[in-house]
Length: 138
View (cartoon, helix red, strand yellow):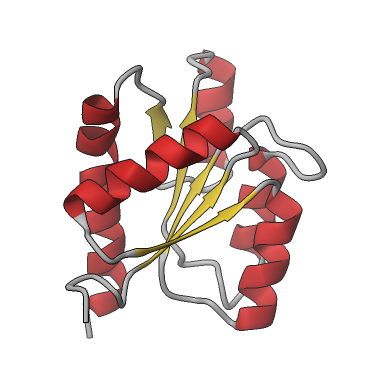
């Protein structure tokens, strides 16, 4: 069994290339970790609710079809069984109003997408570690 096979990382991002590099970055630090990608926030929320998935780490892009990152975050925080799930915004937007809104809606952190795989790996590694600690603590 892979060392991190128990770890669930959910990504909602409609950009195929960004999703590919995200999965590679996760695999660099947490080999065997399950990365599940959704092209929009609605599909992610439905999956989490139906699967009863209350353990894992969520990364959200802000700009997606059907249900954007802000609405997705809001839906997660309003669902009792998902409210404590660690959620990180991962966006290219550096707009102050986006950052403030994300924190106001309950994001654990707002991460700006970097330009390289190495930088992305370094950025998401502590976020995933934080998430792992959230659901492995008694």
